Figure 1 (cartoon, rainbow, N blue to C red):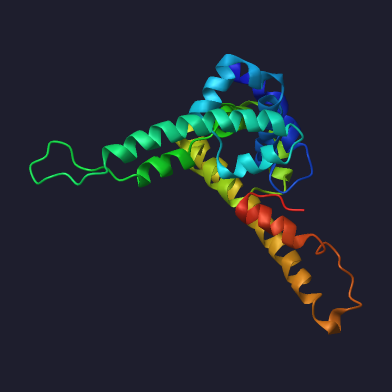
Figure 2 (figure 1 turned 45 degrees about the horizontal axis):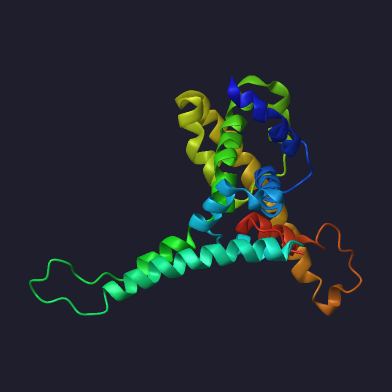
Length: 237
């Protein structure tokens, strides 16, 4: 089975002490995609053609900018900018005159062009294909590997987004009976750990009361950071 190629990163993520192993898998793929994009590959014709066509979403262009290869990013952005401007100028000029009542072509709004461009991203496209296989591998391991099942049950749960993904695909990937069992175990893991983080967040809030100045932080010091990851699937420093 080709999915066996993906068991190592999935097993490693579930063996890590983190609030969402699926977020960790995504982050590792994302970091690798960013390194690839800003490495020597950006001068290769097929990569440049793809970045020209797709560009980058707001989230990933910020991450690309935060790396050291500003020249590589500038070259990619310049090529993409030229393409976008050419397409947009053509569309804008086409719609400059209002169409008559019986005109064959009606003016087209430019909003959909902007929305489509905003959702287009070379990094997202590169990551998503492998990430989808990682998700499928979770079910494969759950169905075939008792050691993985142990890791799954011992995990600290998942973020909201990835909990929903795992819940929704369970029956399709595992069948009706085992899919329901997976969902029941997933629910227990998720909500138990959400309550744990919620309690830690309460402890974080309580520390801002002067009456609790001498109270130990316990597990609450980084509770806000962990809550943001649980709810928004985002790491903050």
